[in-house]
Image (cartoon, rainbow, N blue to C red; front, side, top):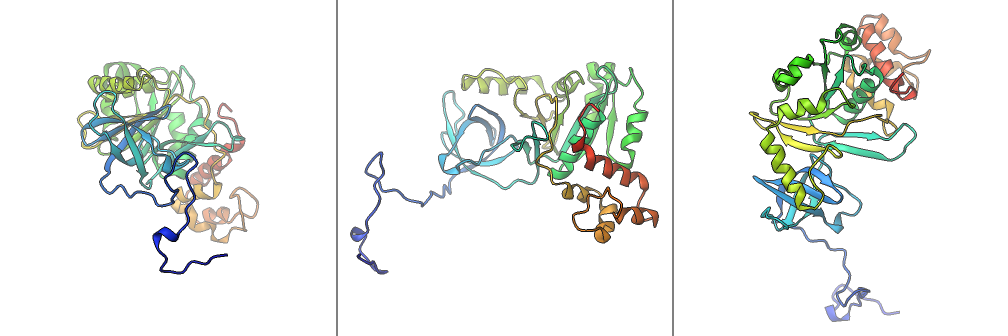
Length: 337
């Protein structure tokens, strides 16, 4: 068998022909040094709507990215037609590292995780105080996903004219979560949006909530209608019609310094099969230091857990330990329990 040295002529090297043509196959990928940066606004059946400078551009993912998918909020590099004109199409060639990831599974037995949004700063959990009744277990699950993914939570409680928020706020008081309480009248008149806006300026905020809690009404009040129409027209270029909250959609916050609102589809369940319970403790720095004395693989809810003594010695509030254990056990309960 012939051996090749370091100084062979190019003509001497055998190449594997491409089955579909004469061009040799190669593992060398183009660097695309002239690629433009953009932000993914929404994804619709393989077409990605991106913001490149001040233009809305429709793009597809390059084959060289393999199975790696871009999601709403991703910072991407694009090449090709970046004009944003009708029927134009660009190509996403790189996806930047993510600072945060909000993920969920269909249920706790589903091994397939879905990335809802990337690079968001906080998660606004919209919950009605009545009609429909609040679902604390669903809130718990959203909180676990937020803490695990690196997002700061924000509670938005609606319909306070139908029920008092005191009981629900007491349940989450030990977590020191910022909150906004609004009534139906404030939601319909736009006053609720002004209260929420104070927590959104300069941040990327993902909104979650199940049907009937007022999430869509709130998002519509936070985002100018003309900007929603612009995004709708762009999606029509792909032949898919306007966005209808069947997929996440990033929208610029009105009168804001760089703020964004990510409207997500209504959720019926929030699976946590992808969550490693050992990471949830990182959201409780006052308790994390007390885990040094825990047995190996401690669930933090067993007889030999060192956190009981840590709290008894006055290092942390007992309510904080209760909240931690409630969140850790939430995978064992259904959202409606």
